[in-house]
Image (cartoon, rainbow, N blue to C red; front, side, top):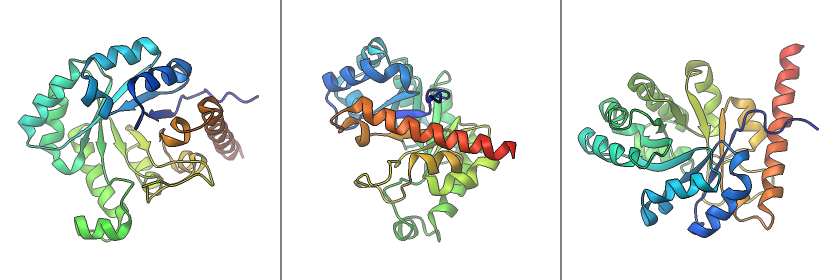
Length: 241
């Protein structure tokens, strides 16, 4: 059997889970995944939820705050979140280089990931919002600013990650909006399968409802991990040819 846990690429999006549900799920899969991503649980329960998740078995906790404000406000909020001892924090790259640098100053011991273009937006919406011709054009622009700011990672769709990889290989490249073939897309627009995202250059995959709403979450995680492992094996095989 291939080693499906080789890189621990999966990040659990704990959206729509109550605290007890989340802690129960993390107690079962926390050691197998890269991180647990939360937002409303942090809003509802405050910093204490970080320790609860860690005690339940989470290796890392990502507070998906998506900060976007003037630099000083972001610095203060990042510093406040950092006191919880969470591991990862998100900011919107569209806030600009100074704002992203302020987040790093506020939370120097956390990984800071830059949100580029939300995966719930299609190209037409991106054009209307940003005035760019495509999501890829806007993602590249925002990723460049995040790189200048010295952030640790980029969040983008599978459609853009392949272009980002060679340019930002020193940064984590995190792809949400992934689900196995045939699974409900929900409110996501720019989506892909786990295997396709890995082959395109993703370092980590954010998976939510395919696991959290599954009748058997462990079986759902196994399915995704196997897809990732097969993709990694095919990539390794391609390199050796």
